[in-house]
Every structure is written in structure tokens, then in C-alpha cells.
Length: 388
Image 1: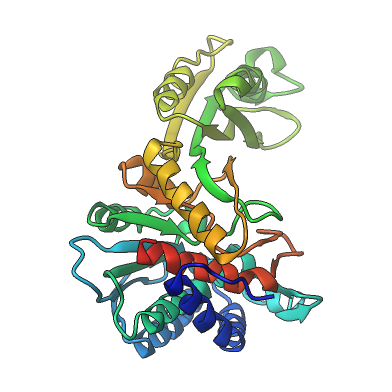
Image 2: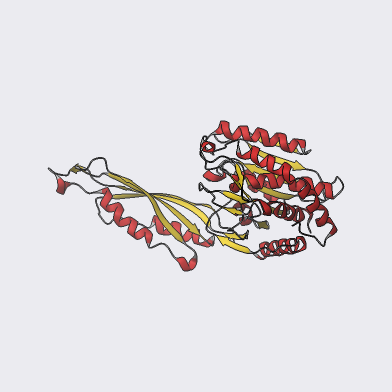
């Protein structure tokens, strides 16, 4: 059933979106069937060229930000209105899925759901951006009410190292940022808070020796590191929203050698930026239990948390009102995962995340979106762009 919006503009937007649903699904299929894993520049750039063509057909100016190692990022500009600052749509078109995944996870529509690698995270969001802007422009009789910047990056799934500076620069000139990452859970909740993310590496250096002939002369880096891992685990503080996960351990060469080297890679998550310094201090204060061993610590928090500020709450309430006018309800959630919205929110730019597709299975082989939610969510994005 098509929601009946009370606002005339929203009614017109919904009508335009509904009219384009078959075209939107066709575009979604095209996006999913061009596989784009973060580490495969050629594959990602192939999708980038297709996206550039799609947005240029929609009368946008597309600026390609060339990259040497990752796919080229896309800055897409739509003219509109006389607003001093544009609204910004933020997303990525790299995925976690290797080329060839389509053979075992083909795009398909079944029982009201669309399946396929990256369909939920976040190729449906890309289609929503395109058709949301087009629907809004048509509802406004050919002219957008304000300028819109769409920023699509190619390295979000691997840390956003090459795109972060541009993301922050574009956000600073924007009035607000709307992130088309997938929604939270089957209810389609928007994300008003995300944890910050960091990575630490702790390397232990010991003294090698023959485990049978000169055992007592050795000082095991593995034993030292094992004791350090237990200390690191104590850094978790669930009440403060801090989690610390020693996720990958390496060490040793042979069973008959007392290990000279061992290391652990640690994932950290924080709910508040002030805890970044606390964690970094704790890691760097680690001391060897065995005086013959040495420790080397590297890394830090590389993605600040998206904290639930009054500006973000206000933006969410605006989204709630638009959704209500369109005939459905939305709720808000926080999540432990990070996105590029963390960067923009940390700058103080009002940021609303999770505006993309409703579904489940991000990074999993059951990844899907709920098709009936697609037009409603697209109309919601268009309403936010209109400043309703």
C-alpha cells in the first residue's frame, strides 16, 4: 500500500518514487552485478564509471578523485535553490565481497526481498540516492530546493584512509549530512550514535633458544604476549561503552624453538571520544612481565565516535515527522559499528545515519533488503533533502 503523505510535496515525491520502482530495481541489479571489493581497484573503478554515467544522465556534475591504490572516489554535485550550504549524502561503493561471489550469491528477488553481495551494504543506498534526488526534483517541477552534494568513496570497508580528508572537507561546507548506510535491524531504525573504532598492535620480543638443549636460556615472546593479552582484556569497560578485542595472535617459528617474536592485533571500540586518550595511555603503559622481553605498541583510534548530540537528535526528529507524514514510523538506535558518518559527526556537522535500505545480513551470505521498504525510505531521504 502506498503511504498517503499529508504534505503536498511529500505526496508528490512519493508518487514520483513509486512510478520509478521498476527502474530503481533494474539499477540496483546493475550495481550489485558489478562486483566491487575494496582491494580490487579495477573492479571498483568499473562500478565507478557506471555510477558516473548514471548520475550524469540525471544532470549532475561528477568530479572524479583519482586514487593510486583504491578505487577513484566520486563527488557528485546537483545545483538547486539559493541555499548557502548544500545537503550532503554520504556513502561508499566498495564491498567486502571478492570478485566471483556472484556465482554463489547471485542477485535475485524472492518473496519480497532482493539478495546479492553488497545489496544491503550499501548498493541499495546508492540507488536510493539517485532516485531520491530525481524524484524530489520532479516533485519540485524541475528545480531542487537546495544544492546537494553526494560523496561516494571506495575505501570505507577498509578504514577510509584515502577518502577521510575529502569527506571532512565536503562536510564542513554542508548544512547537514545524511548517511545512506543500511538501517539498524529489521525495524529499519536510524542510527543516532556509533562507536569509535581503533586498532592497536602489541609486539613482544623475547630471546630465542633451543627448546631442548638450551631451554633455560630462552625467554618466550609467546608467554610474554599471553600475559599481556590477559592485561589488555581488562581494558574492556562495558559501562563506559569500551570494548577491547584481541582478535589476531601470531608468534613463534617452530615447536622446538623458544619464540623470539609474537604479536597481537586488537580491535577497540569507544562510545565517547574522551576515552580514546584513556585507551592509548593504557596500551602504552604496558610493561613486560619478563625483564628480558621487550614490548612495542603501535596504532590508535582511527575513527572517532558519532556521539548523540542535540543537533543529531533534532535531525532525527525531523526524519520522524517526515516518516509520519508518509505513513510510517521510525525509531533510533546506537551501534558498535563505525561509518564515514563518524567523521562528519565528530566535526559537529548534524549527521543522520542508517537512512539506507531495511534488511539484514551485512557482510554475511544471507544479505538481503526488504523491497516494500525501498520506496518509503527513498521518499524519506528526499523529504530530508527538501528540508521538510
